[in-house]
Image 1 (cartoon, rainbow, N blue to C red):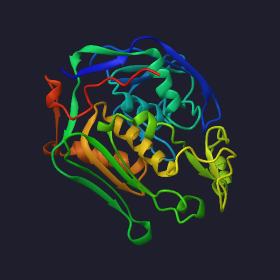
Image 2 (image 1 turned 90 degrees about the vertical axis):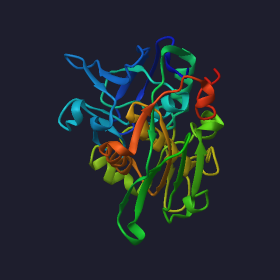
Image 3 (image 1 turned 180 degrees about the horizontal axis):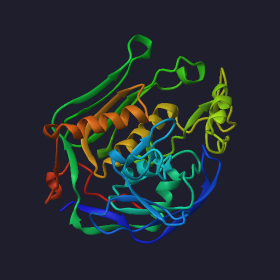
Image 4 (image 1 turned 90 degrees about the horizontal axis):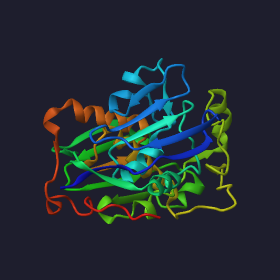
Amino acid sequence: MIQQRTIKSVTRAVGVGVHSGQKVELTLRPAPADHGIAFRRIDLPLPVDIPVTPEAVSDTRMATTISPGGDPGGPKVQTIEHLLSACAGLGLDNLIVDITAEEVPILDGSAASFVFLLQSAGIELQKAPKRFLRVKKTVELREGEGASLKWARLEPYHGYKLSFEIEFNHPALDATGQQVSFDFSSGQYRRDIARARTFGFTKDVEMMRSRGLGLGGNMDNVIVIDDYRVLNSDGLRYDDEFVKHKILDAIGDMHVLGKPLLASYTAFKGGHALNNRLLRKLLADASAWEVVSFERDAEAPAGFGAVAPAW
């Protein structure tokens, strides 16, 4: 049986929110089978639990934000996608995340620190079948035309693979890989995807900060790009780090389903908003998906029964 997973012990991290600039402490706790992933705002007079679901997503500007019931005026937790991407990469189904502010800390701007934290806590197999959401027919969203066209698609696939293409028309980005594909059967999420950092442009800094965004961003946690080049002295971690970060984000955005996907995801110039609308369109069509589990490892897609090795 392919089993559900949680962590074995409690682990913590302290950092700042890339948008809020607030100091925040994150405590990751084991959760029972069938619990799912949920955030708990423990800084409020009465702690508020926010289960991770597509319907809980209340804002997708610059990051993925959740609130109870998707209420944009309610307590929120923003920038959840890097932590969720790490959870997906390690096959984690159940987790309680205590948080002392409204934004997950950015740490180094990638998912690698979250992978390290979760693997350091240990991965525990639980006595319950892992439930996958299997896509049965193609679901697609397209927006804009010509140069503004962007789209995202989910198609049936016995496994989970993602392909992403970017197009920024910028010298620094054009000099790197523009398209990448990643298949979970490779078992190489940590090596090939997790270290890709978020990126931003100096020309957008004033606009973002006027909106209360990007207040905690710096070259320790963001790839910073001016009109011509990458400004970080250490350069890029991958030759195609920009598009790999888009894959990293997409993995996190898809994991708000609460179940690992069995599907092929493809996107062109997509982002958090398009990803969430794609999931909602999928769920709205009951004939497009089903929930499955596997009694025997041999029935499951390659690589899904293995636990990622510890660091």
